[in-house]
Image (cartoon, rainbow, N blue to C red; front, side):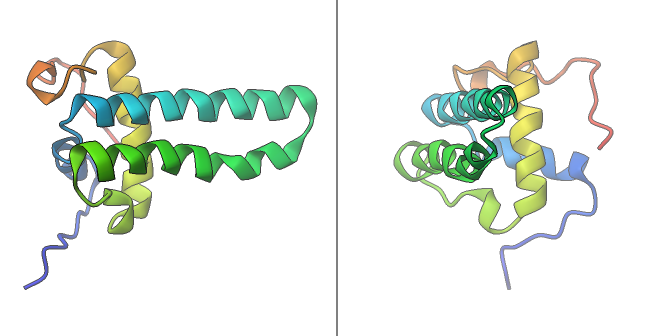
Length: 119
Protein backbone atom coordinates (compact mmCIF):
# COMPACT_ATOMS: atom_id res chain seq x y z
CA UNK A 1 0.00 0.00 0.00
CA UNK A 2 1.30 3.45 -0.89
CA UNK A 3 2.08 5.99 1.86
CA UNK A 4 0.87 8.75 -0.46
CA UNK A 5 -2.42 10.06 0.95
CA UNK A 6 -4.79 12.06 -1.20
CA UNK A 7 -5.95 15.30 0.41
CA UNK A 8 -9.18 16.80 -0.87
CA UNK A 9 -8.75 20.10 0.96
CA UNK A 10 -5.79 22.18 2.01
CA UNK A 11 -7.13 22.42 5.59
CA UNK A 12 -6.69 18.65 5.83
CA UNK A 13 -3.18 18.79 4.34
CA UNK A 14 -1.78 21.58 6.51
CA UNK A 15 -1.47 19.57 9.76
CA UNK A 16 0.48 16.95 7.79
CA UNK A 17 2.63 19.72 6.30
CA UNK A 18 3.46 21.04 9.78
CA UNK A 19 4.28 17.52 10.96
CA UNK A 20 6.93 17.43 8.24
CA UNK A 21 8.38 20.71 9.55
CA UNK A 22 9.06 20.07 13.24
CA UNK A 23 12.76 20.97 13.34
CA UNK A 24 13.53 24.58 14.28
CA UNK A 25 16.37 24.95 11.76
CA UNK A 26 14.25 23.55 8.94
CA UNK A 27 11.51 26.05 9.76
CA UNK A 28 14.02 28.89 9.95
CA UNK A 29 15.45 27.98 6.54
CA UNK A 30 11.93 27.95 5.04
CA UNK A 31 11.20 31.32 6.63
CA UNK A 32 14.46 32.94 5.48
CA UNK A 33 14.05 31.48 1.99
CA UNK A 34 10.54 32.93 1.76
CA UNK A 35 11.78 36.38 2.81
CA UNK A 36 14.51 36.24 0.18
CA UNK A 37 11.95 35.19 -2.44
CA UNK A 38 9.87 38.26 -1.56
CA UNK A 39 12.98 40.46 -1.70
CA UNK A 40 13.92 39.12 -5.14
CA UNK A 41 10.38 39.76 -6.42
CA UNK A 42 10.60 43.34 -5.13
CA UNK A 43 14.05 43.75 -6.68
CA UNK A 44 12.80 42.46 -10.04
CA UNK A 45 9.89 44.91 -9.95
CA UNK A 46 12.00 47.88 -8.85
CA UNK A 47 14.78 47.27 -11.38
CA UNK A 48 12.62 45.73 -14.15
CA UNK A 49 15.23 42.98 -14.33
CA UNK A 50 12.67 40.23 -14.85
CA UNK A 51 15.30 37.52 -15.21
CA UNK A 52 15.71 37.72 -11.41
CA UNK A 53 12.41 35.85 -11.22
CA UNK A 54 14.19 32.80 -12.63
CA UNK A 55 16.03 32.62 -9.31
CA UNK A 56 12.84 32.14 -7.29
CA UNK A 57 12.62 28.33 -7.48
CA UNK A 58 16.33 27.97 -6.74
CA UNK A 59 16.08 30.23 -3.69
CA UNK A 60 12.76 28.97 -2.37
CA UNK A 61 13.40 25.28 -2.86
CA UNK A 62 17.11 25.55 -2.10
CA UNK A 63 16.61 26.84 1.43
CA UNK A 64 13.72 24.47 2.08
CA UNK A 65 15.49 21.37 0.79
CA UNK A 66 18.63 22.06 2.82
CA UNK A 67 16.33 22.18 5.83
CA UNK A 68 14.69 18.88 4.96
CA UNK A 69 17.73 16.89 3.90
CA UNK A 70 20.16 18.06 6.60
CA UNK A 71 18.00 19.00 9.59
CA UNK A 72 14.50 17.53 9.35
CA UNK A 73 15.97 14.46 7.63
CA UNK A 74 12.86 13.75 5.60
CA UNK A 75 11.67 13.96 2.03
CA UNK A 76 10.18 17.37 1.15
CA UNK A 77 6.39 17.29 0.78
CA UNK A 78 6.90 19.10 -2.53
CA UNK A 79 7.73 15.80 -4.21
CA UNK A 80 4.34 14.29 -3.39
CA UNK A 81 2.13 17.36 -3.01
CA UNK A 82 3.62 20.17 -5.13
CA UNK A 83 0.69 22.62 -5.05
CA UNK A 84 -0.42 22.05 -1.47
CA UNK A 85 3.22 22.16 -0.38
CA UNK A 86 3.72 25.56 -2.01
CA UNK A 87 0.56 26.80 -0.32
CA UNK A 88 1.73 25.25 2.95
CA UNK A 89 5.02 27.12 2.79
CA UNK A 90 3.28 30.49 2.52
CA UNK A 91 0.65 29.65 5.15
CA UNK A 92 3.44 28.53 7.50
CA UNK A 93 5.28 31.80 6.70
CA UNK A 94 2.15 33.77 7.64
CA UNK A 95 1.64 31.62 10.74
CA UNK A 96 5.23 32.28 11.83
CA UNK A 97 4.67 36.02 11.38
CA UNK A 98 1.45 35.87 13.44
CA UNK A 99 2.94 33.65 16.14
CA UNK A 100 0.80 30.56 15.51
CA UNK A 101 3.85 28.59 14.34
CA UNK A 102 7.12 28.95 16.23
CA UNK A 103 10.63 29.12 14.86
CA UNK A 104 11.61 27.22 18.02
CA UNK A 105 9.97 24.05 16.70
CA UNK A 106 6.62 22.31 16.77
CA UNK A 107 6.45 21.98 20.58
CA UNK A 108 6.17 25.80 20.76
CA UNK A 109 3.35 26.20 18.20
CA UNK A 110 0.14 27.95 19.21
CA UNK A 111 -2.30 26.37 16.79
CA UNK A 112 -5.22 26.36 19.23
CA UNK A 113 -6.22 29.90 18.34
CA UNK A 114 -9.48 30.93 16.76
CA UNK A 115 -7.84 31.34 13.35
CA UNK A 116 -8.77 28.78 10.75
CA UNK A 117 -7.58 28.05 7.24
CA UNK A 118 -10.33 28.35 4.66
CA UNK A 119 -8.23 27.39 1.65
